[in-house]
Length: 181
Image 1 (cartoon, rainbow, N blue to C red):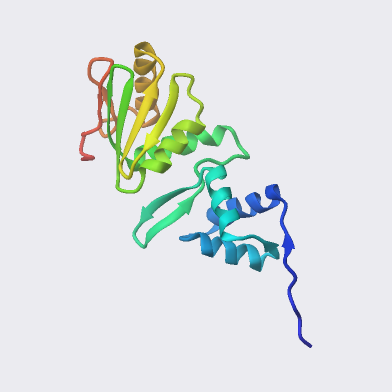
Image 2: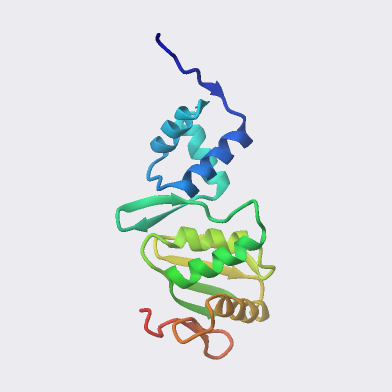
C-alpha cells in the first residue's frame, strides 16, 4: 500500500508555533531545515514564508561549536521568562558594555549580538528607544542620560553584579572586563 502525505497550507499562528517548537527542541541551522521539518509535520511552507516568520518571531542565529543555529529570542508564552532568558544570555554572551551619554555599546561573543539585541528589545525597557546589532556589537539607543544610567544599572544587575559582570564606573560607563575579555 502506497501512502502519500498531504501538505495543507498552514495558518500563520500554527506555522509560527511549530517553528518556535522546532528551534526550542533541537538545533536548526538553516531555513531549508525549517521548511523540511514543517513538511514532515504536514504543514506547507515555502522558504520565503519561513524567512518572514523567522523575522517576525525575532529568531536569532547564534554561533555554537558546530556553527550557526537559530534560537528563539524569548519565550513568548511566559512573560517572566524574558528577564530570565535575558539574564542568562547577558551572562553567557556579553563581554563588555559602555554607555556614553545616551548611547550604549554592548560587545558580545562573535555572532551573538542579534540575540542580545532581540532580548533587550523584547524586554521592553522603557529607557530603550531601540537597538542595532552587528555580528559582535549592539548599539543601544537610550531615550535620556538618566535613562542610560538606569538601564546600565538594570543590565549590571541582570548580569549578577559580580566580579565578572559589568560594573558601574561613573554612572554612565560600564565595563565587563573582570576576567571575561
